[in-house]
Length: 157
Image (cartoon, rainbow, N blue to C red; front, side):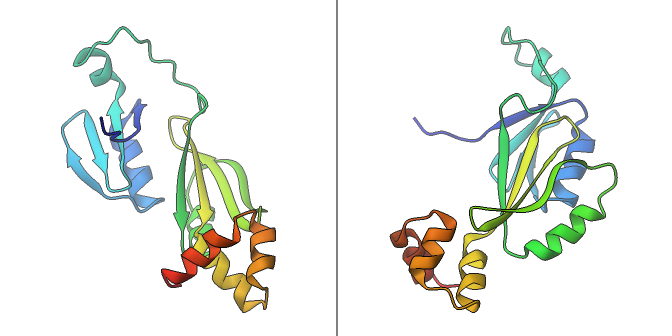
């Protein structure tokens, strides 16, 4: 068995598509009418299609979050923060905040699903190396094992 991807059930497929494409830079790679698959390995499903095409006995609960967060990493976090500020009607949970050594922000998509965008670890390590921190200091600040940090560096900044 192979896990494929999370599917977010949404009220307005076109509105959600624009949100994920315009703000998060995700490219739709398959459009099957009521179902869209994106390059970030997740899918959007229109609620009406979900309820009628493949009736499964589940009831659409809707509402904020439902315990799910989609996590993205951004290598140019500063540029993303500007895009975030300029996005109209954004339901911001919290703006860019330093958490365990990296910058993160959380907000909701048009259907209330929680989105987390974190600074790419290569960018984090590069920033800290530029500040003169040792590998051990970076490990302590980010809570990542030293071996993980060294593995990222071997793949190149």
